[in-house]
Image (cartoon, rainbow, N blue to C red):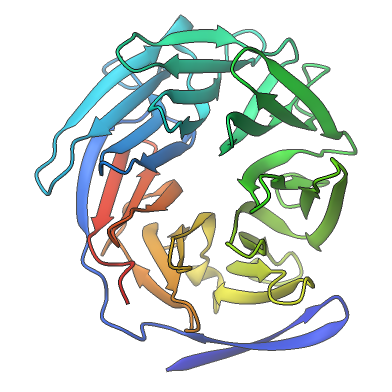
Length: 382
């Protein structure tokens, strides 16, 4: 069965079709990895070529899980692989927020995160092969909220929300680069309430693309800014009422964005999962990926997107009313499909999806009490 939607885009009425459940539902293996600190502070997942799964998240060490620490977990390959967990930073029992992780070809693990005692400050933890973790403050400007990191060659690129006045009401979008010795930072947008909820990807030229919210946080303008090879930034406005977004870039350099849209003019205040891309012609095209019929079906919470080596798009998000973990995919040339990962209420927020090199799909999410991990062995195989 197909659903058809018509929505206005830049003054043009565009029509798209969406196939729901066009193939058999995927089979998921779901595990409880660790306890999570209260507050749902983001989880990051990476899969290395050896099929080891790496997680970074805000954990806790007290019985009631009120404190917050940066924790790192690794799952060994195989259906019965076990998790090993390490507390990376427990400073003041108030750290580890908004973690974002990259793993270099040499297997060095880098985690960017924020503390939240005194002034919130951006922190950088590094695990070199055969060595112990090191941690360091890397910026003199308060911030480190909504961090997103990616590799570009031998550099680590980062976007985050900074607070130069140490005032959450006056944020700015910050971009940083790390070449192995020290960080260099650049202010990209300090307009009213700019820089919230950042997500960063790297294009096929190694250049950064960042989505973020400005004005009327948390339900403000969805912006996408893209640096060209001449180091010039071009910024587009995609929507006026977005919440959280994520983005990926395909092998041809086209950008793919998923975000939750809030409808402030609706009597039911509905929330939908949206998909936008500038493929195939460079102009932005937007469609509803998973739409709510009424307030009882609000969906699209904190989405994340990745594109695998075959060009298949994978999206994780939460069904905010059913509080279920959801998964959507689109094989090349096919319609979108949407599925429930968890069959009942699971309170999953801040999900992260990755595809491995064998056709498997991995999702992690933070429930506010626990870190959950879901694995589908063949979700990337058509």
